[in-house]
Image (tube, rainbow over all chains, first blue to last red; front, side):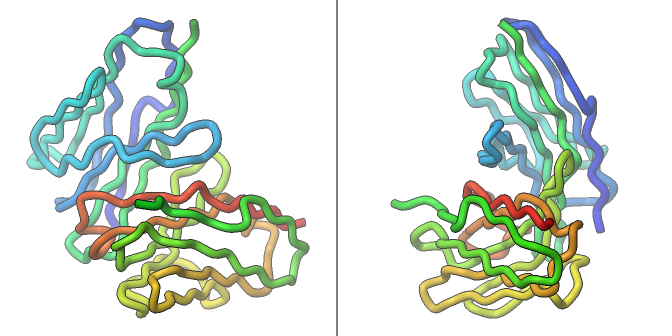
Length: 109
Length: 115
């Protein structure tokens, strides 16, 4: 299956700081999503972004499919941004999303 | 529009027992996928049900089985529980195959502990 690597594994920020999370994947994909998992385990879809750039408030994402990576930008971070961010990709088989191991983000006041 | 719900929220079982987890998909969705998330790891795909038939399976043994009902709700059954089955089990619903759709909606999960 497609391998998904995320970096960094852990990140601690002070409130107001900006950050960039990276996702590398090993093969061409037709589906790439970013999720945020809150401390209670709920996964929330942030972006569907197999290619190009999208923005939603303080969050934005860019996927360069030809180079097999995606970036998630968090600006002016808030304590509520804490949690684990996952990148997940889907192959042409369409069977499933393959998740990375995530980036654990802690935003301190 | 109701979201994805799962029951129970927590469950404790002993080795060798059997367990059934339940998922109600979001209204209008015809696909349900199940994932296992061990502590500190990303979710791992177990299998997917599309219009009541298994349509894709991850690297899980046959003691993991499932069903999807005509109303598109779903069950995950695990037989002969092992300690390594302790995990958060997530259900996700979508319109169309999970790997192709632009959005999957996840339930809150069932945390299973095997003693």
